[in-house]
Image 1 (cartoon, rainbow, N blue to C red):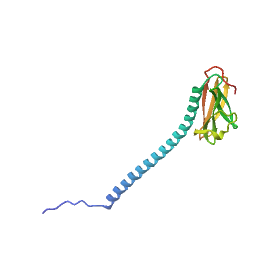
Image 2: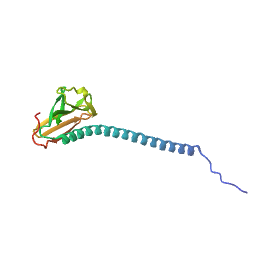
Image 3: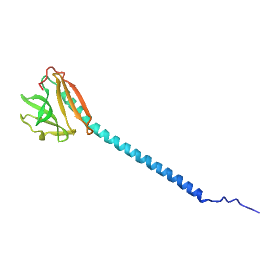
Image 4: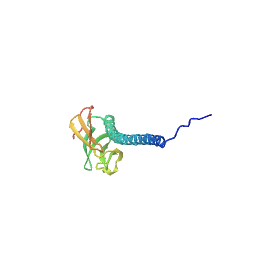
Length: 165
């Protein structure tokens, strides 16, 4: 007599295996969804930070590049606060204006006495831009980000006397 042992198959074994697989699949899906949300929020934050930091570094580089006695001052262009940099080329005075216009930091290089802010070239996105002459040798540049947090940059004018505010 040859009797083989045949294990009995129960429905509960199949249901347990299926339930365990479903829990594993749901957990994996949940981890992927959470990871995608974290990635999206950090990418969004990095973009906002990039725009803000790029604008401040751009302004700092412009001031350092053109820092001469009386060449850099705070002022206005079309009612908007602006950083004004004056340079002389071929006996004529030219001005570079850095200002916020329609949600962008703009730059306008012109020899005109009464320029329009519409003519500037957008550089980066910024909701606002402020320039303040803190003292004769110190400028404060301020830009808020999309969340309303204010980032400030203090620039020391190193080339002697500067223009008035």
